[in-house]
Amino acid sequence: MKKIKYLFIAVFSLMIVASCSNFEELNTNPDVPNSVAPEMLATQVLKDSYRFWNPNSSDYSFANLFNKHTVIFETNPNPYQYYFSYSPYGSFPYGSLTELKRMVEFSKGGAYESSFKGLALFLKASALFDATIELGDIPYSEAGMAEEGITKPKYDKQADVIVSILNDLKEAEAYFAAGVNFNGDIMYGGNVTKWRKLCNAYQLKVLQTISKKITPEQKARFAAIVSAGNLMTSSADNYQLAYSTNTNASYPYFNGEATRLKHGLSKLVVDALKTNNDRRLFYFAEPAPALITGGATASQFVAYEGAPTQLAALPMTLNYQAGKYSLLNKRYPLYRDNDPFIKFPYAEQCFIIAEAIEEGWVAGNSQTYYENGVKASLEYYKNLPNTSSHVHGMAITQAYIDGYFVGAAAYAGTKVDRLRQIWTQRWLIDFMQARSYYPQFLRVGYPVYPLDPLTSMNPDDPTLYPQRWKYPTSELTTNGVNYLKAVDEQYGGYDGINLKPWYLK
Picture: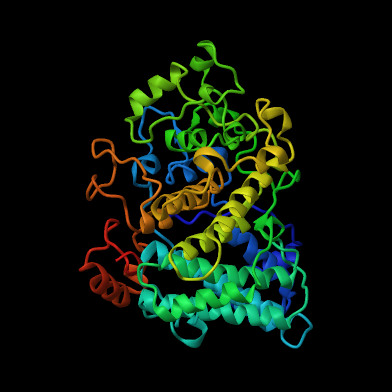
């Protein structure tokens, strides 16, 4: 739910930084340039969109708690682990809309104009998709229009926001189709073909996220996108940003050994991997010391144990001190150029389509898509650098991948079980990615996140999973009339975290 940003440092000259920092000044101050290269703005907005919000190992650990992938062993309970947050407020990414507008303006008449128009629409649509899923109704049609005199934008209904997002993604794809490869892109290197695939794949994600409310026409749109075939074809199309050995572009968990020593795996993750004899466990974790002392070896699945995320902080920490749980793998804090942040992977596209086939939205073989998604994730870990000495003798090989789908990992015989397999595998690809599967959990309820009312820190009702984030507190003072209207119409006048937005009703 909580939007997590990604770290990537782009070095600009002081002149460019000054010119980008205040666009009103840029247009009026004769001492600064009256234009900025659009590729510079593209880099800046992409960096701001995908950098981790506070690049240190401690906060990066917190970012992975909410989806029940990991736990923190501290005697004081961490709200992220127990269904709340230190700051239960969402955010509006409207500041970037002005930069995107300038990016398009400065590209007008140039060779890259169409490409930058596509980029602007995609970044607007994807950012506001995250915002509406976090919050509910949001300003969309009037967002970013302060220069046109609209400083208090109306809140659009979430159903209408979704329609606008889908239309903008479709239009973005058309702009990329008419465009050429461009500079300033730190995600795809300016490859418009990959951006086109992403725009189509992202529409599938948006449509599936509203599955409880989807219309027949929208299901037909989903099927048409799949049938057209201009989608991701392998992990080479992953929408990701790699970290580097540059000291200003390091993996957020780098040099976080002190954090790792109290950062463990959840029982939910460990048990899911054990069930499938899934070797990703050996890439994620260290064996539990007590189990090694008891005679197990690091290359055995039985040497690993996860912590129940709902267990109270004190007994959990005591169990950790007794060596009962597996800590995060030692490789995570060791390398600056560690695992890239994958905002939207090919594997997720496979699982989205597999579910849609099971639900009858589109024709096809759901087993093929399920298996392709799992294979893509396994191959990702097989090909990671800096891992061979950290996988406890249980490396993922091609032979292992080819033989993966046996036993519990084989595609199930009933629709219910098949969907659970798809959802579990989709959840697993988010491990240590600071990316949130949580809206999908709210949508489908699987895998089942442990909840104990005695340890839940949900302030309104400890028996419930939070359904949303609150609106930014600034809205009450800067756009109070529209904010209060939106809260009243959606949530009966109470801006609460347990109230369902439209897409979950």
